[in-house]
Image (cartoon, rainbow, N blue to C red; front, side, top):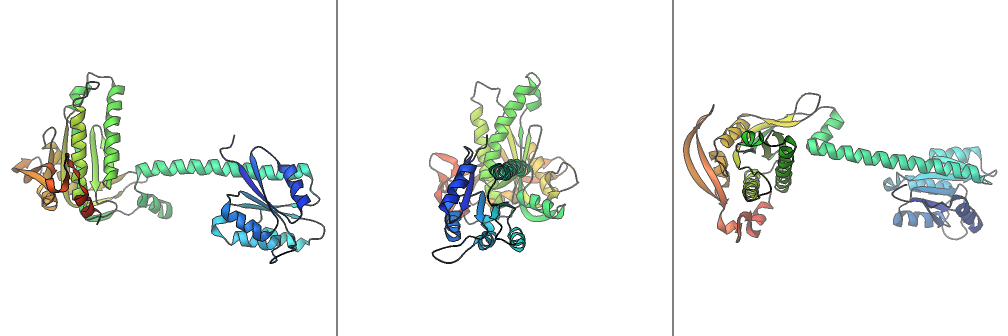
Length: 374
C-alpha cells in the first residue's frame, strides 16, 4: 500500500474525452485531476502536487491564448520545480511522426495512440505509477542513508566526499576540546550485566548528544565511557570556548542529578576543557571518522584526567577567553602527565548577571543576546 496517492492531471478540451480517461484510470490509489487547457493545467501544477500529466499533443484551445500539448510539455520542462513530473501525450492519425519525436525530445516519457485501448492505457499508466513508487522508496532509503551519514560525519565533510571522493584536513587557530569520563566506570561495571551498562551509557550519551548540538559543538567520538566533543569545528565561531563551557555545565548538572536516581547505579563525571589550535578532518578510506589532532586535544584529555568527580577542569587558555562570563576557581600550577606544570581552573557556574535567577548554569536573555553574535 502506497503512503500517498498518485495524482494524475488529464489535460484535454473535450469533456467526453476527459470522462473517458477518468473511467479508464479510476483506481483507489489515484486522484484524477482535469484541466481543459494548457494554461489551466499550468495553474493547477502550481497549486496541486501532481505526479503524472497526460495531455493531447495537438489540443486546440477555443478561448484564450493558444497552448497545444507540445507547448505545454515545453512549459512544464522549463520549470525546475516540475522536474519530477512525468508526462505522457496522446496522438492520433492526424499527428505527424515529427510531432511525436518533438514530444519525446521536449520531455515526455511516453505516448499513447488514440483511439485509446483501455488495457494498454491502464498498463502504461500503471508502469509509470510503479516506477514512481520505486523512486519514492529509493528516495526514502537515500534519505535514511544521508541521515546516517550526518550522524557520523559533519555535513561539509559529506559534501566534500561526494564531490571529491576524499576530504582535506583543515587547520583551526582556535577550537575548544571537551573530554568527559565517568569515575570508577570499569569497577562499577564489573558486577553488572553488560546490557544494562550499555543501556545506561546510551541514556547519558544521548543526553550529551542533545546538549552539544544545542551549543553548536561537534561530537567527535566515544571511547568506552569517555565522550569527546569540540567547539569551533568544522564550523568556525568565535564563541566556541563559551559554548563549550555552557554545554559542560549542563552535562555536569545532569549527571549530578542522576546521582539521586535510585533506579540505576549512577556514575560521577569528570570533565576537562582546553582551547587552542588543532587539525580536523578524515583520514583513511574505510569506515570514515571525523577526528581532531594536536597538542590542544592531548591537553584537554589530560585536564579531564586531572579533574575531580563532579567538577569541570579548564586550562588557562580557556579561562582567559571565558572569565568575563563565568565564575572560576584557580586550582594552581599543577603537574599533569606528559605536559609538565600548567595552570588549571574549576569552572563553577555562569556569573550571576548572565545567569537565570533560579539556575546558575543556564544563560539568561542578556547572555543569549551576546551569543547570538556568533
